[in-house]
Length: 153
Length: 153
DNA sequence: CATTTGTGCAGGTAATTTTACTGTTTAAAA
DNA sequence: TTTTAAACAGTAAAATTACCTGCACAAATG
Image 1: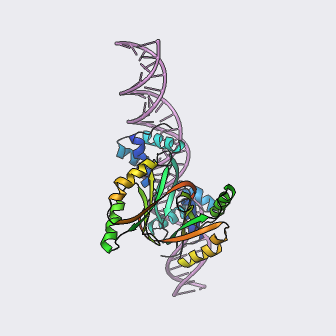
Image 2 (image 1 turned 120 degrees about the horizontal axis):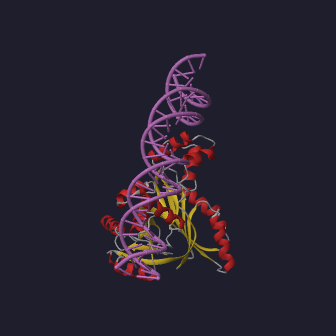
Image 3 (image 1 turned 30 degrees about the vertical axis):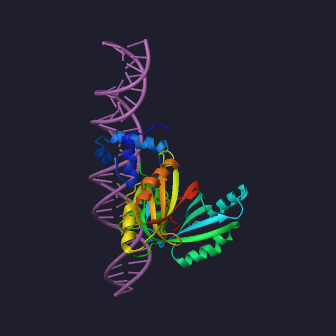
């Protein structure tokens, strides 16, 4: 994995803020022509620095205004149990993120739904149906102070 | 906020997976021509359903492989104290997400860094310098089971 | 020191996509 | 049934992407 220079980093900083910027616009910012910018972006894509390009949606408009963080601990921690839990979680479309953690709990889940009622149904009908869950603790987002997909590079 | 039909939702589902898809490609999937797809996307942008288009980067390649979740509770909860805390958090570039929560703790922070050493430095030099923090509890991501920016719509 | 080699950039061009406009069809409303 | 509005197909101009060639500069080599 060869190193990136300042121009590469600058391009990445721009694209993770706004991927609709054209090579021409980026070139102007960097005092270059479109060619080297185009070539560098292709290289960054091919080397895997850029994973994908996506549209970020407004969850409020799409009736997913309730965000819950759910902390789960398993009862049994054998290899098989953990893998089974993970595959069952992946099957739940409401779960946007799931991390295996080091700390007082085993897993963090981030869940987006329309209402607290929906969350109640989600826990009752889906989460609690998963075997081997020992502890389940729920938190709700009151306000998004800050949320970005960008990395500080 | 008028309602979206199935075509709109289908377009959003496609774009939040891959925003580089052309209107022509999307039109083919939906058995339409490029025109209505183009117009619908513009409408979805203007009405705020689509917030922005971004590149998602590979944090491992960029030396941000360590992800920590930090739970913070404040000592004093007066209006002014909370606002001050929030603005101080926003100034920390390492913090990718910060949510004010309902539950046993006040705030969740998600932090991306290169190493545990960096995290130690971050807590020692930056987080702990913020006044009014009562409880500070750290968790580390062992494995990303599932992580997406998509909403299940 | 001169030569070679390679990398990165500028400039140009064809293919593709975006953008915007026009007219038609379809569906809903009067 | 007639009117009105919305959504769609088709098309053309503008812009961007994708690709190519050649130049300039720097590093490596003889």
